[in-house]
Image (tube, rainbow, N blue to C red):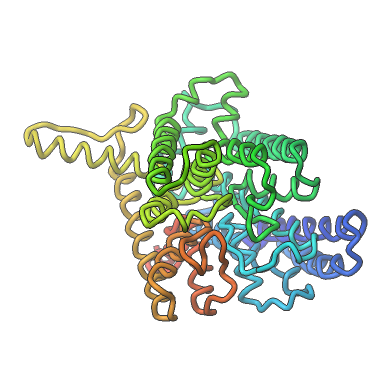
Length: 482
């Protein structure tokens, strides 16, 4: 088992090494930062050396018929080791970051959370800013592929229902899962290139357009500036980012189906409920802003729309300090970060998909209580929801709540105020990044938080991105025995 996993991880480390060396070359030849290429070159060579060693040393390993426990372990090790080796350029650079801060920044980027320990970001070398953006972009496509292929196999959080999007004969878009993954990657790259070009066209510099294109499509939210998108003061750029955050928050398999002229893919209940919810919340927030004294204007509408889309897609960009909009707006934003967007997208959160399943289960139970002699089965997409899916979704939600409560208690014990402790736990576990309050709100950051709190947030980001069960199952002795 171990040799097979190390052989696969060898390719992953080789990929990370290749990415790091590419950034090193870009730094030297294009950005012309005469010293920043060195830490990236050293980190890249180390990753390539270890990755190549694993590939050559374990090339005789058998890769067929990996069991469930091997897939669980591989998924966990892939994200953990990627984060460790991707943090090496931060550690080797002259930024004087501790291992905690370097690892926090890397995990935040790869999980597309967008929380940052860096301040005065515009003063940092462009090579570092490009690396953060590239990590988010790389993590975004990794999340989608994992949601489409690995998690349904592991039956995590009810994801086996979502597997019908590409494996059921009636819905099969392409004959092999590898072809589906390749098609999703092509869509992901295509959306990224279009987004970058449009941002450059409306006034962003090529470098800013590339970085923000990467972090928009990955719904990651890391910006090159402390004041995020508000720095540009370009309404056209804000609308473009809104459009591509929305595009990235629906299942990317939908675009693959549309390209194959399967237009019924848009009539997916998850997508419809998500868009209706997003529109309704935007209207509610706009009404509240007017109630708070903000004028009815294009600016207010744009700020409300941008904030709702950014938080619900778990991107975390900001164009205004929504912490000044009152307690109702703050609580609404926290709830939006919990909900998230669609399964099969780059977004985080619990996701509309699971809430829909939960409500359908609850509806069937209520109908049973009203008609004791009747038999009612919850259905999804015209199919009866299996009891295993029900227990899987409930398990996911319970684990999510327990994780958030534990992280809140750790933050409170470390001296955080209640708003920061609650907001930080929810936004990191939901992979949103942008929180509420003066400390980690849209104008703040995670720089000065205690080390214990940062490690609890690192755990929350990884648990949230790996759907909890994937990691927690590894801590069970019965999982390893059976």
